[in-house]
Amino acid sequence: MLWRAGKHEFRFPRPTLVMGVLNVTPDSFSDGGKYFSLEAALEQAGQLIREGADILDVGGESTRPGATPVLIEEEIRRVVLIIRQLAALVRTPISVDTQKPEVARAALLAGASIVNDIAANRTDAAMWRVVAEFRAGYVAMHMQGTPQTMQQNPSYTDVVGEVDAFFTDRLARLEQAGVRAEQVVLDPGIGFGKTVEHNLQLLGALARFGHHGRPVLLGVSRKAFLGQLTGAADNPAARLPGALACAALAVRDGVQLLRVHDVRETVAAVRVAAAISAKRRE
Ligand code: HH2
Image (cartoon, rainbow, N blue to C red; front, side):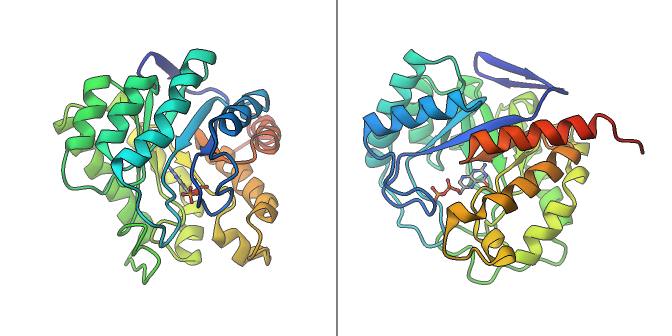
């Protein structure tokens, strides 16, 4: 399986790709404000790369439940400078975590190769035309509702079946908009319009999403459901052991990308899980 993302190409099977999160926001739920200045963001990017990140995911708008939306110009201002600098300094592929086609375009022009779209449940194709034009990689994430409404009353008849059907539908729509399947990565969107039970059902069914023939990305890092399961409810950083358990099981289930804040620890967990998976007997 091949994933094309601008000038980058990833061939699978290969070791799980670790996408390091670089939030240049004042209000992200887990690290808000820490990397808001250009200097701090560049320093953190270097750290993530040294720890083994394969991709850097730069985000200028928090997606936490109830977060305040950011204006286009402000989001562009937050992400473009850092992406331009990073693209000049490092070879690591850069992804932009945005819901806005205008921001995606500006980021791709600045040197990003991947658009990470938590709002792939969109109805209009403007974002997809940008992705098609730049031949960028595209992460199509499932979300029920919007970040403002998603946790109010998430409800599904069959969460796994509905997310799976969403992937089928998005691949078809993306193709209509000129985005090739080989550009696309699928993400079940853990915590985006989902209860703890929905998240667990999806995490238990990750292997099922492989039939689309596309890489699957998982983002569980520091998320609230881990706190609810382990009692680390008030401290996102204390959710790491839970996230590492998910990472190991995801590797076993064939997930190709992990989006994480704690790169060094995830790289180590992935390495052990992969070594065991390679010896598995069915
Ligand atoms: N989760 C978050 C943000 N972007 N993108 C994808 N594809 N998958 C995810 O699971 C995902 C994502 C939320 O985490 P974080 O970036 O730490 O927080 P915030 O949105 O508050 O900046």
